[in-house]
Image (cartoon, rainbow, N blue to C red; front, side, top):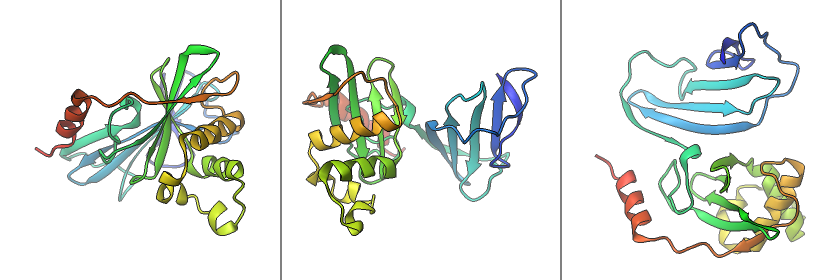
Length: 218
């Protein structure tokens, strides 16, 4: 692919396509496929990559304080959800992540891990077979969780921040079932039936040391 033009969101968004392709904004924005950031001396630069739609890909690279990225900067660190693996800390803050292991009972090779970071208020699902981490919109997922728990009080059911502030109150089965119903509406992974939760393996000393040294400041 090559750059074929500027995206609908303006400066900072480029559209990749095949040579000779024309920009097509007739469809809604595609879901986010990958997200990360580069922390620099002039602020944080975020990178958002969307799923392929109509043979085109949106890539948005914007600064925290301005859309245009400066020509000169000093990189401090970078992080992305794309390289996260179960047992690791949160890519953004390095803190502990709530992990819910799930598997397809009809296929032992199909395993998933739902990951939730309370501090950064993000969640994603790791697909073992592809090693892809799929980002999940908080509000849509929380709606499914509230329906499952039959919670209808507006001050609770509409406050998606409670997914993180009340996270210990939700069981692994609750969180897995909410993912299953969400995935039926907005498919992130291919599922042919229900999933069952499984106990995650204890994190070994190697994983703990890796996280300590990866988050330690120089």
